[in-house]
Length: 345
Image (cartoon, rainbow, N blue to C red):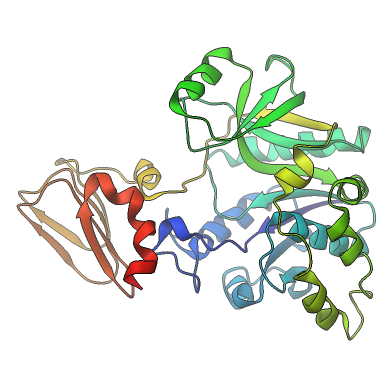
C-alpha cells in the first residue's frame, strides 16, 4: 500500500506578518487561488488516492485542515500534542499508519512547497515506490537538480554522477555559503535537499529504534491508539521525546539512503524575496499583489490585502499588509521582516 504523509505543523515564521501562529504559511494563498496545503494534496492525489493521504499537524490547526481539505477522512488527521520537531512527529505518524496498513510505503511531503510539473512529480513518487518494493530497507529521498548556486537550501552529495535514476547518497550537507554553493554546482554531484522522502514502515521504525531509541521506547510503549486513554497518555509522554529533526536522527546516520534526481519545477518559497519569483512585475518593475495603484513609483514590492494601497512617488520600498499590521520599509530589508516580530507584537 502506498500512502502519503503531509507535514502541516509548521509555524511559517519567515512569512510573518501574513503567516501567524494562528494561520501559518501552509494555510495561506501565497501563489494562485488555492492555499499551499490544498495544492499539495491536489498534486498527491494524481498518484495516491485521498483515503491513503494522511496529514500530521498539531491540535490548533486541525480545524484549518478540515476546512481546507474536507475530503480527507477525519481518521487520517494525526494530531501531535505539541511540536517536538520532525523525528517524533514521523515516528508517531508511522506507528499510526502501520496500524491501518501493516506493510505500507509512505511518502513524507511538506505542505508548503511549489511543484509546477505535477506529472513528472507523480513519476518520481511511483519510481520511489517501485524501488522500495524491491529494496525494502532503503529510504529514498528526492534531490532537485540545482540551476543556481543557492545558499538557502541544504544539499545532498551523491556517491556517483547523476546519470543513474536512483543513486546512493554519500552525505547530506548543510546550507553552504556562496563560494561552496558555486563549487557544488560546478562539481555536478550535488542536489538540493527538498525535504521529501519515501520509506517502508518497517524499515523506518527499525531506523528509529536504532538511531532515536529514546523517543522510540516512549512512543512504542503507549497503549493502542484506539484505546480511551491513548490521547491522555500521548500528551503526557510526547513531551518527554527528544526534540530533534528526522535529518539528524536518521537521514544523516542511515547507510541505506538513496536519492532520485528530479526536475519538476520545485521551489521552497521560504522568504518574501523568494515569493517574487511568482509575481509578474509591472512596467515600472513593481511586484504587486492585492488592490494596489501606483503613480510615478518603481522597484517596489507590495503584498496587499483587503485595503486599497496607493503608491505616490516612491521607489525601492516594500509594503506587507496583514489583518493586524502594515509594515513598510526599504526593499532590500524585506527578508529581515520576521526578525522584528517580537518587537512589534
